[in-house]
Amino acid sequence: MEVEEGRARVKVEGVFYNPRMRFCRDLDMLVFATMDSKEYFDALSASGIRGIRAALEAGKKAVFNDINPKAVKAIEENLRENGVGGEVINGDAAAVMRQRAFEHIDIDPFGSPAPFIDSACFSAKRYLSVTATDTAALCGSATNSGLKKYGAFAVKTDVYHEVGLRMLIGFVVREATKYEKALFPLISWVREHYYRVHFKIKKSTAMSARVYEKMGYLAYCSTCLRKKVLGMGEGAERCECGGKFSLIGPIWLGELKQRDFTEKVAEKAEGKLRAFLEKILAEIDAPTAYSLPALAKIHSLTLPPTDVVVGELKKLGYEASRTHYCGFCVKTDADRDMVVKILERS
Image (tube, rainbow, N blue to C red):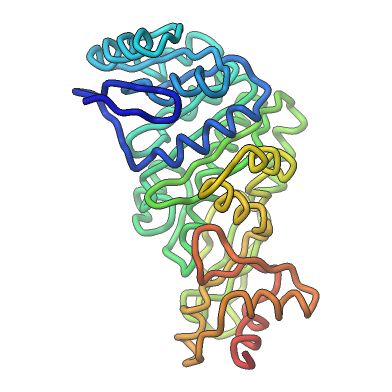
């Protein structure tokens, strides 16, 4: 079977190809075109679709790798069909990354990226892109799996995707500090069944230590949905409602995007991609978010429009926005009680 995607035409018979990830790959091409790198390493290439598109649409010198000989054969054929040059490696991705450095590495596995992150952080020089589809392990639905894979504790909250994305970022950032590298998200998002993050890398002992200032915990009360942000080493008392806090983390508490970079990506976008990027740009960076239906249910309140709640919070001087991953969720630096007061009077 042959598929056409972007400027590429590839044969996908006998190799993994996920048509549901086309939106992600379309957005990736805009991100790659905004990065000032030349080399791109597709560590888990499968059909080679992303690397071929990176070469055709973002002008990258692509290097492909897959452990499956059938995939390697398919990549070589697809390169010829598209008139694209590129090195093709048949090897274990983690081993390849231990043997040589790459300017930009992309880890897009089927499932968890965790087994590849240590080697990717060791090898990547300027940029690292990561996809995770094991969202249950990251968002708190599978707590033990999250502990084993990502070294962090989570329970399922009312805004579980916020937790999941921040747990993924926190894990990758922590892994990189072992190699005196500081990683910062250029852009990240949640969509359908996956999380996607593009990182900028800075090689610096001092900066790799300072990233922990953006790391910490989220104290979460499952009784009233209250949330408190805690830095590394801080603790939490019992919740004001009398419930017990669960400490989620360590997670990334910093920015989920670099605004100027994301704006440049958005300038290249049209249609659904542009609309999605505008949602990301409109979202504030506060690590605390609330599901309005969940809060309204606890207090037996009528649910007002999300934009009304955001507007009322802003009138009171708080930062507030919708989220790109949930139409009924609000991100704000206001505490939970203030959000409830606005629900009561709206």
